[in-house]
Picture 1: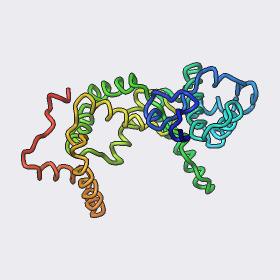
Picture 2: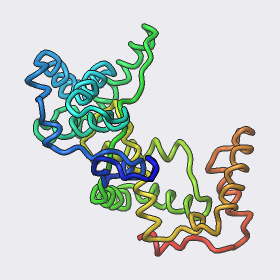
Picture 3: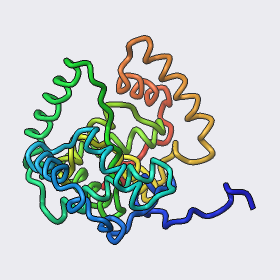
Length: 260
């Protein structure tokens, strides 16, 4: 048996998108071994203050926790340690309820984060996201219900896009991120728009979007190529997709009743 055929030496997480990437699920016991707080009290204090008062941590703080996990559980790929830091941080949030992670403080948190980004750019320092949020199916159901009840026009738009086109673009990702921050406690330095992938996966399981069916893969690819060409011409995604709809001349369209 080749190495590629062997199962990983750990439990693969059940959350999205980590399950698709084969990422390690970190146990509470592993995260508690050789306590970061006990081993690095100064770094812990700075980390805690940043989470609570700013709602994000720096790349250097993230990298220091990664190095700590590498010592605690050696021998893994870097991607597993990076998601381990995500688990570490969310476990701490459940314990300490970081003030600036909370949905009601999301606008202040966003403002503080982008002030920090501008500060780093002014000093010519590069920044990167500190990993991505992992979402349980229960959270995805909560998010779906929230969209249906609180921003129904956006929910209908998502369903129309994936039924008629089969893919979306940056504005949908940005709106998913904005809405997720209104529902869940999250830090600002990670990618939490990843809930969108799980949302579409679950919505497709329920509604069976036409353009996500295997038989329409070639047509979806053709539409993607067409969109990229139209995008270069300056047409917005909504303008283009509505033109595609009109071009279908009455072909099957996703029914409003299925969106409720």
